[in-house]
Length: 381
Image (cartoon, rainbow, N blue to C red):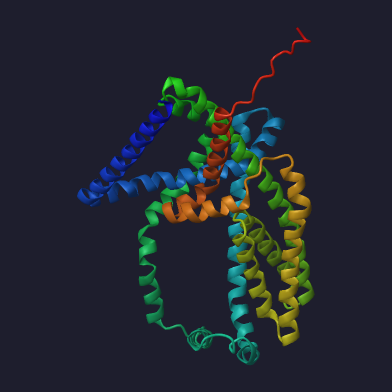
């Protein structure tokens, strides 16, 4: 009888899911234009909210430390957001300065070493790519107005979304403040829609999810700070030894590439790989002979591998022994899946969704197999 009831419930759930999917399909056929407008409106709200949620977990460890000092949550939240704003402004200022100072330098360096590049690099590239690169380099100082107009037209679609970008930039700090300051109130307001008999489970599950994601990001931030220091020092030393640029500029480049590579560690596996390409490409441009072209990119790789080795052998075992770890493969797979499903929003929310999956699976497993309470033995009686 119990087995028949379970089978019946399974059929009912499957039929309900099929009915919902059918309704969504029909709605999409009948009201496709209206649904596109609705989707766009939801996205305008969901994008800044998801970015703010992601940042709130990154800032939680800092906010907690500040609150322990100032003893005021409002002040600690505002100071945390201020620190974030200073870091973001400093990074964009650094990027702008490096771009403004070095684009012409890099192009000139390529021109100076053009024979060497043709003899070595272009041998392994397709003719279509080499032809395009030659055209760009030789015509860098003689940009035709038609090229400028074509670029303007090509970026017209991007400029057309300026309003949504502006709304996102304005709304992220607003969402961030309330998510950090009133997280408990927001969570309790969401519990209102949960039926009373499930409310205790929803509350416990919400607390566990928040703890899992918070501890994961706390561990990741410690890892990122450690890697940032290591990579910044390592890359700066390499650029100083190379000697093609001034020491202050070499330190700035080391700082920039080190921070980028460390923060890309938030994307497991593929992040560190992509982050290594930038300093390798830059140092390769500065090389003037085959020996340097082999030596200095290998030094960059050595710094990267050394940092990753220290992370796996020393940093993560110490940090993750105190924190709850989400397996990198689970995080990476979630980023790919939810990024393809929901776009940039899904990519941002992938890690919190991982926390939901892990905490939910653990909680429901505990409900299904509760830990037995040891009854007093005969001797104790």
